[in-house]
Image 1 (tube, helix red, strand yellow):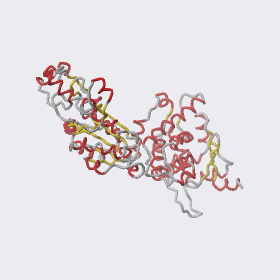
Image 2 (tube, one colour):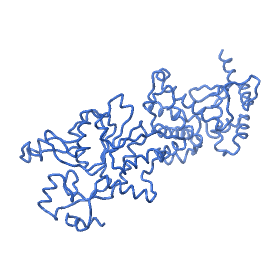
Image 3 (cartoon, one colour):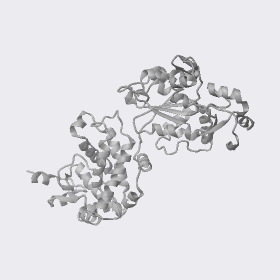
Image 4 (tube, helix red, strand yellow):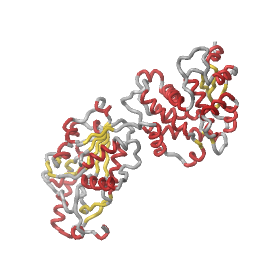
Length: 487
């Protein structure tokens, strides 16, 4: 259909255009995508077998939807992607505040205009990108904001009585007619405001200052809520929940691979950073594992959740830490190092809610411990498992390496070493090279240096070595030798 030629109601009628509700639009376009085996929600990972099928069933059922989940679970992203299921353009009566359908007008303005001009009524075309409205529910939101109110200035200018419905100034919801309307953090909306939504969702009328207008708004509502809000800041009133057709539970990524995909997709990196810093796959795994450890940590409030944004900002900080070091050393390229992970601590501490025990430990100490826990979890994927209980005379693959540290006064790895100095330092530890060659023989040479540091950190976590952070780097020591030297 060439919409440029359709400028009046008469043109629209002669074209054979038929109106459909927004829920029918969503349903029909989703059916087409399913038939063609096309993705309706691109860029969403980890929900293929859980959330997306439930969301598609809700759309096919023409339900209003509540997405319930902890922060950083792509609830708003899902709602925004529903735009792709709308028709590209829809017609509206020109000048209508609520985007009246020319073939099915509901406002007084549109009805009177059509009655006056008939087929000459001008129409305009609305792109689907303009059919998305979003409101964050905050305690200061009023009925006037959402539904509307009497406008005394309009009454004075038009010389109308307050009994005339033309004095009404429509709020966000009527103005979002024929659109997707999202209310984020619904439980934060005061109960009396939630009650004001009842009639809009069910009966198709709005009530403003004594006016009861039969205004069957055509809308797709999507609500988002955090289950923690149900007990802390508010709740969704039961009659409103009853009017929401489908409640869909979201969740965090279930595997490191999915989490990595999300982080790589969402991280806002400068191309100069990615060109400058080589990041081993193990480092990416380790970064994501920190998030998984945080969700299980006894120091962190599990009810508040660990947003996917934590890994995204941590990855950005990780590359920035390596970039800064490289710039200060006057180099053009570098390998990511374990020391660069100290740069992700501010990203972690700002995105976790600590319980009392965590507050006692301190946010930075908890973040550092999460890194250690992540190392401990991934260690058996690369090297033989270290058992907690071993006989004193039992041989282990790590004996030579531990012995090497026993004979040293301490091995220091400063943060500001050039790449050449960094590699030379790690290559000095011959037992480290032997372990890499034995257990990871196929690993690329460029990845082995990070793996060497990973191995040292792993031995620290399993109480085979000790480490001490000082101002400009890390020192590794034999476990018992360090105890003796400290006496």
